[in-house]
Image: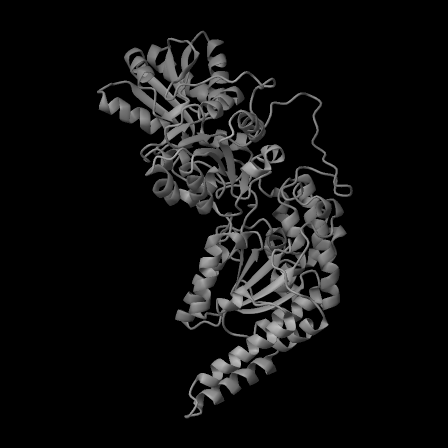
Length: 638
C-alpha cells in the first residue's frame, strides 16, 4: 500500500509535534480533516481499530500543540485511539504497515517511539502509570506535565478508581482527560457552565484564589479553618450553579468540563489554561466515536475494529461466496444458548465482551440470565463465584489475556472453594495483529498449578460443543475450556452433543514412525502435516490430548512404551504447557524417549498475521512436517 501525500498538504508537512506549533488555529482546523481522512484511508485497506482514533483527532492535535512532548508525557489508555498520535509523531510514512509483521504496532509501545510514553493494550492502566511518572518527576524536581487519556468505558475498571483515589492523596501534577463518548457521566451544560469553566481555568482566578486561602490561613485567631470554609463555599457554589456533586472532586481532584472534544480552538484554549494549574485535575470532554465517518458514527460496534471497507461508503469489502467454517466465538454463543434452553441453572457472565464473545446470542433469548459486568475482570470472576455458591452454573466468558487480571480471584474465590464455574477462555493462543498485549499464550501455564482446576482445549468445533455440554453434566469444580480466535475447520458443525469423559485423549491417526501429541486448534496443523508425511511413506500416531489437566496418563504410558521420539504441539507457552507436562511424566516414570516440544518460546510475540506467527514460532503445518521428517530420517538413517 502506497500513500499519496499530495492529498494531504498540511499533514505532509508534519513530521513531529514541533511542526504543529508552526500552524495557526485555522490551519490546525484544516489539518484535523486531513488527519481524519488519512486514518480512514489507512484502516480501510489495512484493518484495525478505527472508531476510537477518529474520535480523538482534535484532542490529539491539541495535546501535541500545547504540550512539549516527549518531555511532557501523554499516556493513551488501552491504545485503540492512538493512530492519530502515531501519525503526528514520526510514523505517518510507515502507518501503512500498521499491525503487520515488523510494522507499526496497533498500540503504543515504548520500543517503537519515545513519544509513546507507556505501553498499553489492556484497559484502565493509564492513570496509575501517569501518577507514577508524575511522582518520579516530583522526586527529580522536574516540571513535567503528565497526561492520561482514558475513555468512559475504561473508567469502569477498578484499577482506574484505585489510581484516582491515590491521585487525590499524592497531589502531583497529573492531568486526566476523560474521553466520554457514551455519556456515561452526565453533567448539565449551558452558557453559565462554560463561563465558570473559563474562570476556573484562568491563571488570574487560580492565583487570586490561592493567595486568598494563604492569607486566611495566616490569620492567627482563625488558623486554617477559613480555607476549609472557602473550599466548602466553592463546592457549594458549583453544586448550586452546575447541579452536580462530583465524584472526582470527592477524590481530591479538580474537575473541569465537560467540553466539546471536537471543538479544536476550545480544546487548545482549555489545555493551555490547565497547563498552568498545578496539582491533580481532570478534564471531561465529550466526543463521538467514529467522528467524521458517517458509517462509523452510525455503527460504532462494527467500526470499533473494522475489516477492509470502502472508504467512502463504509461497505465491507471482504466477502466470500464459498461456505466458511464458523468462528469459535459463534459456536460458543449458539451452543451456550442451546444448553441454557435445557438447563435453567446455566447463567453467563462477561466483562464487557458481549458481542466479541457472541454471548449476545444468549442475551437475546435469556436476557435475565446473562450478565455483562463491564471492564471488571476481577469482579467478573468473583461475581461468577457468588452465582456458583448460590447453586447456579455460571459460564464466565473471558479473553485469555484478560483473565490474567482476575488470577487471584480465580484461585482465592473459585478454586479454594471448589466452586462450579466454567471459564470459557476465548482468544487462547496467538491472536495475531493485536500483538504482544493480547496474545493469549500464558493460560495453560498459569491455570495448571491451581488445585481442583480442569483444563481442556478443543481441536475443532465439534469437540468444543461437546466440552461445553460435558461441563454441565456432573460438575465437580472449576473447569477452563480454552479456544482460539478465528474460524474453525468444520462447515457442518451443528452435530449432536455427546459427553467427553474428563481427562481422556482422542486418537486422530494411527502410525508407527513417530508420535505427536497436540492440544487445541494446532491439532489441525498436525493432522495436515501427517498427511504430507504419509506421502513420503511414513506414518505418525497422532493424539489430540484434549485435556491438559488431568492429562490422559493411560495414553502417555502407551506412547512412551512404543515410541522413542515424541513431539508435542501447542499454541501456548512452552514453559508450563503440554510439553512440560509430558516431560514431567517422562521423568516421574523413568522413560527414555526423546521429546521435542513445539509452541510459544520464552519471549513476547509481536503483531502479525496468525499464520506468520505460527511459522515464526515453529508450529505451523510446514514446520511440524519438517520436524517430523527430520526426526524420522535421522532415526532410520535414510
